[in-house]
Image (cartoon, rainbow, N blue to C red; front, top):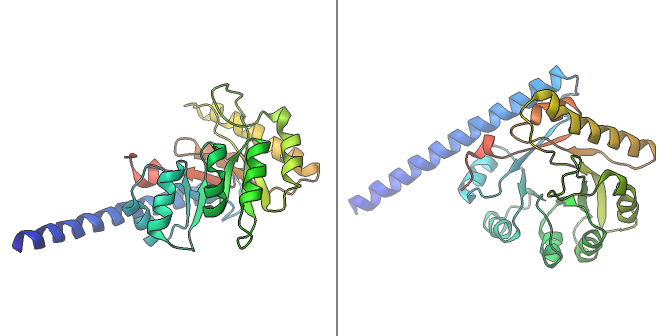
Length: 245
């Protein structure tokens, strides 16, 4: 009995430590975002934080929820469905940010509020057709291969218009904006260039009448450059949760 009590106490202590670490990380990231909004002349609150929780434990996600975070990004469907089922909180906004296979669209359409990685007409059609009627339209971003890397997913810039026009005809999805994962760069000026391209692309689309309000770009290592170039949503994982398991 004494041994069981000691194990329980240690578990509680470790959980409290984990909650404290993640809360502090979230506070630091949010403060950093606020400072960067000021530095680059962005309106206060114009940049949302998406906590990328792929390959992170349910305990870490619950710690982030306790600290006030509500939007989480997942890339692997089966892993995400397990987490969604365990957490079971309708107030949480789940974003699918990974590559999408046709046989996964039904579960994605049923369980997520956002899909940020649409780059194919067939996938868009399936998400629309499989979105349950009792749920609001599925928010989607078109993933743009802004660095034109052959190994990366995403639609090329010159193919974007036909996909946008097609998605605009689908009643069960709602076009929100663009997402990109540029090539990794360590130099700040080099990081800014692809984000500049995506921002310019968004401005051009708005001038053509597309009602887009989201630029999802920037991760743990380059979110300053993304905010400098107009990002409205940064996707931060390891800086919040630590190394992925």
